[in-house]
Figure 1 (cartoon, rainbow, N blue to C red):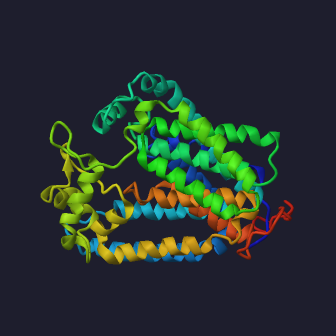
Figure 2: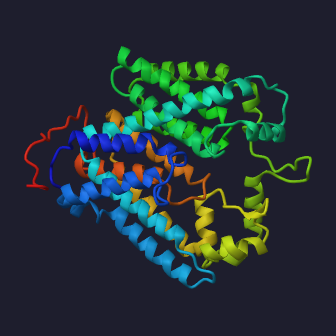
Length: 420
């Protein structure tokens, strides 16, 4: 890949794109296009005009090649099903284009740092909003509530984000994960104390949404970070983990903990919670869709209604990307999707614990991988940022695939062969 350092404009575009992502549903659309779509369009135009040589190397990275194959297979399977709808496939294709643009911009340490701090900035302002709008309400609730009562309380909490509390929780926990990784690596000094505070603050805000998936994602991602960091400084690790645990637990309202479990029990109206409902229904109909699926359009327009995947008059998503892909395109679509994940895993540089940026990037990748288990959306922009930053870093920051100690960016911004 052409060894050209990123400019201030490129780093600013990447930082802004990540930071304002949670606002995409609250800024008025332009001709039906969200603000995030417009920003990605701006990134694409900039990359095509100013970085064509770098784009020419990035677009055929193995991850993207397998993604193109997945698009082709899913399109053929969708074409063969009744009531075909290509909206999911088109949006997935747009996500891959966005990931390619992010990869072009994330080709050095400065740009990668901007992307990581963008995740922290997004989580920080969302967490502030959550504290102002829900902390007082939850703190006033009693600790004796059961699971279903806690779920009803959760529905009454006004998060101000279209009631998509799981997505809000994921934004917060990603910021907490990145801040934790940056604090853990390197020599701890006074400059890292604010990052530790941000990690605690965002973790508490995550729990205010009562999202069980976000809690599990945060715990597993932090364990992965600690594992990659290794046993070089056990004392420092124990101190940081103790500080996090002792700070978070007393700040979280008691009612939150009553919902941190998975249950198949029925409520007072004889209904089980949505996630358990969709899983049990899918298992009962597994032979009908396992081989080739029923098609995306058919599932949401007809098949889902006929087979009981309905709650409050509409067909529910599967709350799990792997299950959703299997329902839509069967085991063939699922295998192609797993191939993409395998390529992402193989692209993670070795010895991540030696560098703070690679450690934080690892936390992001683990979090989005786990997010696939709790969300049925396969074309989310958070995937575009995670995969794009990984590909850009592998091509420009760690081209050998191994992280060395004390890496610095040796590429000087100067004559740009892409535009000269």
